[in-house]
Image 1 (cartoon, rainbow, N blue to C red):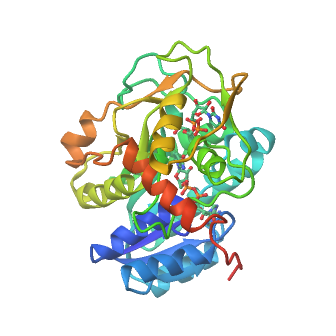
Image 2: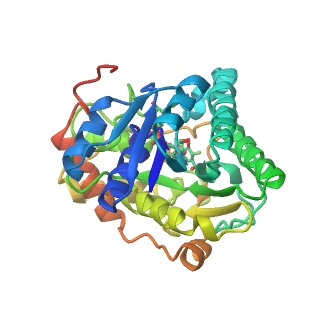
Length: 341
Ligand code: NAD
Ligand code: UFG
């Protein structure tokens, strides 16, 4: 089976591509390299010991999409491509709607015209906004608090409408909690541009000495130790969830949303302690004011994923930190060759 992986050169896409290749799928990676390096795919090929078809293309570019569907017999799409920085989306909302929403519309139109109607979509726990109840089930009310989150909500709605108009579509919405870590080889991982927005890459860069200290955003939340609590999930467990989703796709009868998390919440201070243990390095930190838009706590109810996908995250916080540290220490500057071709 040939799977088109949009955004396949990015963080989660590259790990999922590797697992797909290892499980016998043929993969076409489609990425405009706006937030990725071609090098990630080279590393994936090395690890999988198989070549990967790569198209440098934008999901808004219907001509390149069509040429890709002409060339390959694509049966399903895993759709990772998108912009994902919350702060940037507040400053530049139109580019987020253009890229994420218009891009998805162009992708769906092309898929439909080639009779490919199976999609696994990268949604996010951000669609739950500030949750009223924890753990969060898939039935919790949906709400977005920033343009990035709204693109995810809009795309979920668009995909529901597409299915409603043509029941041949099979669409799964995977709502990721907080993906972290790296492949156990330490040769693929998250390679943020500039100063990381997210906790785990910031901690890793502090451990290696690229950042002087970690600012912990808020220590007065109503949580165990006052710092924010999140459901961190190892990126390889997440990748495995996509394989399960692909396997189940043909069985679903409506657009189906599934939480991908571990079901456990860790505070910022607990993550710092776990990373110190994994790396043997001290992580200097200072408490800073709360970050605007942050919520106190967020973790998943994973019972539906267990029951329906027959999938469950296997790696704990120690494995997440150990693998993240291996990637960071083997590749302190991320992917070295950031050329655009
Ligand atoms: P990433 O930035 O590493 O990967 C996204 C990839 O999409 C990049 O390689 C980028 O070059 C590509 N891309 C962006 N716009 C494109 C376009 N118009 N055409 C073609 N390619 C394009 O991000 P990631 O962390 O791997 O996230 C993958 C998906 O998962 C995204 O949709 C993101 O919103 C979603 N998600 C991520 C997280 C997270 O914390 N990492 C959490 C929830 C959901
Ligand atoms: N944090 C710090 N210092 C930092 C970075 C983060 O204290 O330098 C704290 C945050 O305040 C929060 C926790 O660490 O309590 C996790 O923050 P992240 O930025 O790593 O993750 P978020 O939960 O804020 O956001 C992530 C993605 C979003 C996505 C959301 C839900 O970045 O895109 O998960 O899936 F919407």
